[in-house]
Image (tube, rainbow, N blue to C red; front, side):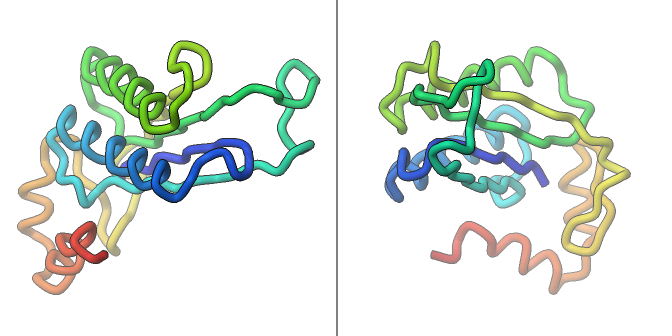
Length: 149
């Protein structure tokens, strides 16, 4: 459901840092929204030198951008809390200055205009009923995500 893209300079984040960042983003999203942790996806994009510009000049900073696509319908106070917690957690995991280097953006998508696991998504808060209504095979597959390592 929610998909978070983390963009950084090529080679900036180690495998361990990526794992910590993915775990923290997943934990924070789940705790703030109440959605199951297996709903969250975190994808890392690395940008090669010379392919990233800011203000028309090549980026020479230690920036990490987090772009989150989440379902609309959450309270503004929760979204604000979520992005603040994520910025702090990413900064800690990446060992960067969170005030300058970590930028977090949330984009909201209408739930009924999204399909995952072959099913149109529920409104926020309706996840338990939606999950219970899934065919057993789909529910088992979805709930196994995150336990496979």
